[in-house]
Image: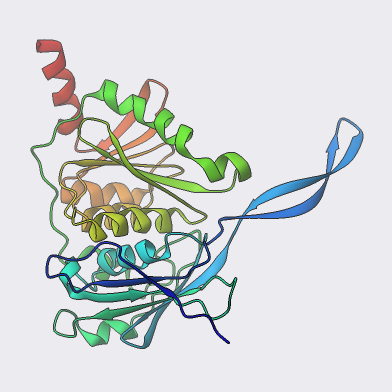
Length: 302
């Protein structure tokens, strides 16, 4: 007989009515395979670790919303973050329940069901094209303009970050990337407070999924908007990463690689601090340099 999923106490919203349901069996982010290694003319058979990639379907009030290719794990956070960053909800109170049902013993679910307050969103949003691959969070959207002009708020302008502190963050991220260390195939998103303390780190084969997992973690723990926080992402800082960060209220976004042209345009329009090529003791500021350079001036004066 199918095994009933176990109820998770999990986080609740202020009114205490958010229910989260998770499978009893843990989700796995790593899979194993046999490979042949060629090295300087010699071959050997090895067991290799691969980053898992599976589809996740998100349903809202019984209706299919999206399918995204993701690394299994933290699926409820991914769904909650997606709902916020794509504009279907504005706050935790709008989510009544999140469920990830496992149908068989030992199985892991590739489905998250969300119950939303029908007064908090437009049901027509459920007919939008939300399909996303693991590599691009906006490829399937009907219109980029609809994302840019949906009413995102400008992030807090008062936050300041010392550039020396910013340079220390990528090393912290790398030290905490447990799955990447085993597979070499995952992106990471890490959330820091304004003093450089690591609050949460999530890995996923899709960079936009990793960000949604971070935002979902913050939403389910009553920390949105993230108005005095720094988000560090591996890889490039694309448009979808900027818009998802803005939806969560994040004022400072840094990536270890380059941003895209559209990401820079959106960051400048919204007054977000966007840094790229954050490696060692160097980075490039594409937008919002006042948050970083003012921190350097403050440190020099003291």
